[in-house]
Amino acid sequence: MKRRDFFGIGNSKAEVEREYDNQPLSTAALDKLTTPLTRQQAIHLLRRVTFAPTPEQIDSFTGLTPDEAIAQILGPNDHPLPEPSAAIQNWMDTQEENPLTVGNQLIRAEIEGRLRTRYFQFADWWLDLMREETMPATEKLTLFWSSVWCINFNYDTLALLPPALLYRNNQTLRSNRYGDYKKFAEDIAMDGAMNMYQSMYYNTKNAPNENFARELMELFSMGTHNLKTGEANYSEGDIQESTRTLTGWKAAAYEYDPKPKGEFKVYFLPNLHDTNAKTFMNQTIPARDPETENTEQQVLDEEIRNGILRIMFEERSEAIAYFLCSKIYRFFVYSNQGAIDWDFVGELAQIFIDNNFTLRPVFEALFTSEYFFDESIRGIQIKTPPEYIVGLERALGVDYAKAQEAVVNLEQILYNPPNVAGWDAYRTWISTNTYPLRVKYCRGILEAADNPGLVAFAKKFAGSDDIDTLTDALVEYFLPVPIAAERTQRFKQAILDGAGTTEGEWGGLMAANDPNAGEGIRALIEELILSPDFNLS
Image 1 (cartoon, rainbow, N blue to C red):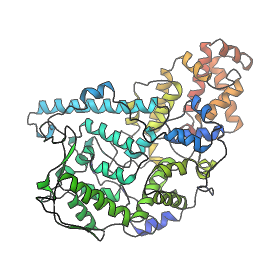
Image 2: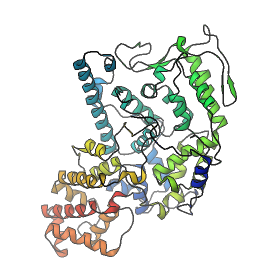
Image 3: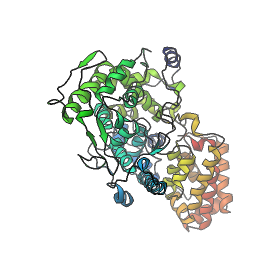
């Protein structure tokens, strides 16, 4: 997989200026919405920050203020991380021999087979977390950060990253999801999966490898050019100098690797580190004595945390804030790269800077703003494959056996983006290939739901014994914006035809938990699946 096979944003001042001139989606501002959430507002909020709300969640969030709602969604800063599944516990501390160094092809194939099995078990665990999530809601933010700090299980065409490293990386993303971005960057720099994927493993004073240093600036923090001014954010010299600060770090990824700090931990080899002075963004990082000033802690403190990272956030604060807030905007508001509301992004960026690059205030400001709840923001995002599949699973209470296959074939393979820049999103999520598959897999989820389960699902909506009330409630639940009366009437007729009943008899079917009522609900959901706006959030 080619790391550089993508078109980055902001590659020239002209492109930045062209994109900056787009008209905003909404005239609403970052001012806080203080009124209690209507039902439609609660659904909108929960759609965007979770993997589809349950009817119970909608009921509990309706009437909350946005502040109250987002406090529940984000939860406390010290909320514990999820436990690994039983399958992951079996191998999370187990190392294999590096398959690329194994001469016997049968043994190599066996090792790679175990790694692939573990990858699938890891992906299943993460999908389970999405499917079973309550509050606080952590998995949408974790998915977002995996699309920023991109890592591939299959990398450099031949190699496979040990899934134990992917699991650890996933927990690192989750634990930093709304924390201090400076610490986030440091934790990722010391992350074993990133160390392997970005070739820091091979970065030494005699053979520098620029991959991570380059992507840290271009893709993970500031972009090539300032998105507000269009000026270049860094030089090739900055890449080279920061690369030198990152020499000597390796991950204990395989069975025969040194393990001074334990399996899968990143460790430091002083003899491979460049101890000479570095000049990064016009600031000097002093030389160090290779014998007395070259320990792991000294280099981490003085060259990384208080070296390149401190300098980046001091010298390029505006560029970093704009770049990262534009990514947040694209993921949670509107993914059209050509329609970013830069004035609104600038307001978010200023909050980011004012809070010393702590992410939580940015998310709180976004998700409680009048702008976010403006009607023009609803129904404009195409659901990502996990949202699309997991959302229907959550709605119907179905654990679909082909969920991972579906997400893969809908072209968002977890921990396997198309390149280091991640997924393009927006209209790339739907094509002539993937749209029929979306319908196919949702039908599979619907087929896995039995009639008693569908009736129980319908009864979660108040007034489900009245066909008009239920139709309105289900349309509101599954579609992002109100629809015309004639469409609602067609959906209502689908229920009646599927159940083989009349309006007057519907209430009796529901009261009796009649299987035909389940068939009516099934017929409606089948019609909804075929609706284009079913794909929108």
